[in-house]
Length: 544
Image 1: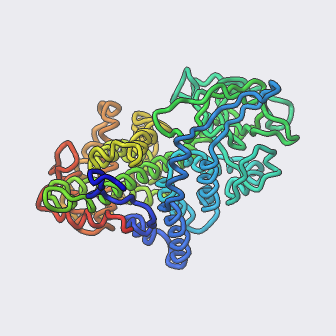
Image 2: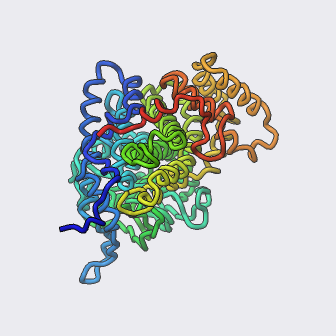
Image 3: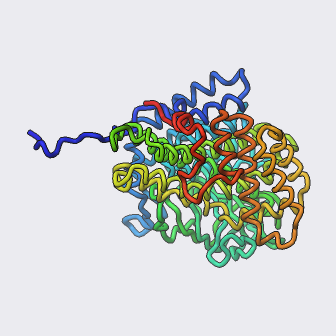
């Protein structure tokens, strides 16, 4: 019989057994506006099925197990043979397999494929974010391979397959494959043109042998990798398979796995190439241009991954506050807590709306939308990923000491939250990329301004922000030092325009008043008290 002093009361039940998709109004509305009516029922059904899986106790347990049992490197077998394998907990394979079978690597060849995949990625990442890395890179490899029609014909059907098979074998013998990427080297970091990995022709057409070291190579148990190396004509993109066509292992020496802040379930490695067989992708000396579309697609996934972390943390904060009673009533009804929750909800909804809009531009695939993406992707990647960590940290604080305890799941979200701002180019890299596009591609700015201009006249604070942005853009003196400021303003104006057009008035009003109108403090919970904050909070609540 339990002691009376251990009777537990006034605790929120776990947020489990719910549909992660249908309980997210911002996401469901985004899908409805970006997916053609004839495809909506099919999209809703597949996303709701995935949402129920993501919100299930089983998926949550898989996430816990995958992080409590991180991958382990085995460089040699019992006989001393070099094998360079990474062992994962079965929960990792269950999560990854479910992601593949749910179409998270299949966006390029089906109607509204990018919006449907983006929504699915946002949903399934909330179950466990670490395994999203191989899903993202596999998806993003397709446009890079399309620069070589023969390679694309060979690999794309397997990259977009919805069948997961974890063992290493020749790609020709597998129904589906996963891809990774290796760009970063220790002497250069983001400056990939400083790479020293060498590529020597190997006799056959497009065949090379690589020698060098990759400082960061994630998901090393993938079937193939796109890497950069120096060929005779300069930096070039190559495809490195793990297993060669004859069944032998390619030289892919995993030196160690990184001991990371978060992302513990995923293996990130250092890899040595020593006569490693590779196929050239694209022309010699055009490596950055060849791989840049892969980088852009993974940057969009950084936006979506951060939006997922924000959504899950905010959902947890609102859920806790709805059940927790303090000072004579539900915590969610206290004016100060309501202000905090509403502020967090705005950040989450703006990130979701922006991520899905970018995915819709990929689906449209017009010249104007491609130009729009050229500026919108680095701006969104810069800002949304930067906002992730403070959003998750404030959401954790809403749970108080309960949120600081591992069982709540909030510490894992917090450790994960800085990752997307670092991967695929940190903040300065995004700002510089944005400035480069502004200076070299005037059509990109025209497309961006046309997009935000669609909301002109609907909110005076948005109109003023657009005017101020134009003033900033007209002044090119010292523009590099203002790169971050410009990226931030462009992202906020774009988010504001999307919310003004599509979100409920209480959401767009609060966003424009705070983020664009200047009626905001320097911490969450400083929104103007005259706004309809209760409606904003209720909209963010996940119904169980």
